[in-house]
Image 1: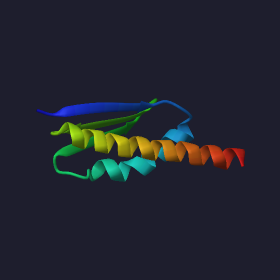
Image 2: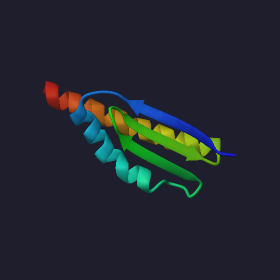
Image 3: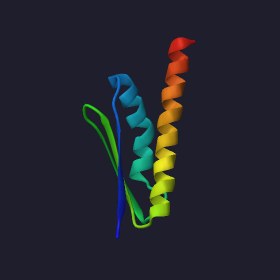
Image 4: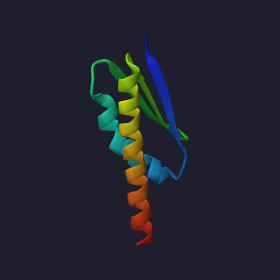
Length: 81
């Protein structure tokens, strides 16, 4: 059985593009052969993660969410000085 999760991020196009560029290498080379990921940049950034074990799904999702959070915070600091 496979568990999955979908992460959607809405925002300014330049921020979504930065997130896409940062996450793309992570999604094309998942940390385990038991996981697969897909990333799309449409009106929103969409990241889908599927793993054969729930603990792997949690770890991968936490990693992606941490990257998203770090980039958004970095861009905010850059904008606000």
